[in-house]
Image 1 (tube, protein in one colour):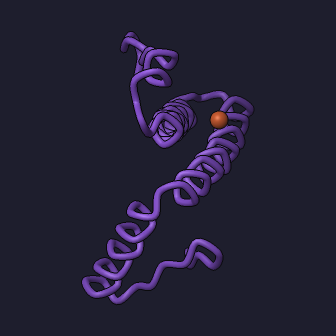
Image 2 (cartoon, rainbow, N blue to C red):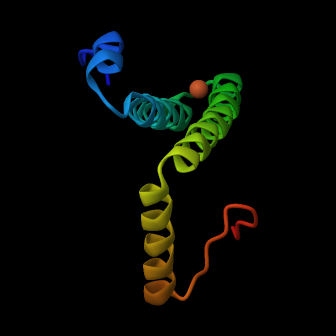
Length: 105
Ligand SMILES: [Fe+2]
């Protein structure tokens, strides 16, 4: 993330047949990086107010990630099928069922 060269989004749009899907995947990656950063900072800071703000913003980034993932799944049927297969495999292995609309914590 830090110091990494950003992708040339404009070139992607010209060259990729599936530019929108790639835009969404890149956006998901950016949100995941942000979540990790803010949660790591929250775990390290000794300032309680900073910790609270970092965790609040990390939660917002999770919403953003969900927005991008939902858009990607609307555009990529194969991704949707593989996501469902992955969820079933986890259920077989762990006995735990996942539903994005009803998460068990
Ligand atoms: Fe975000």
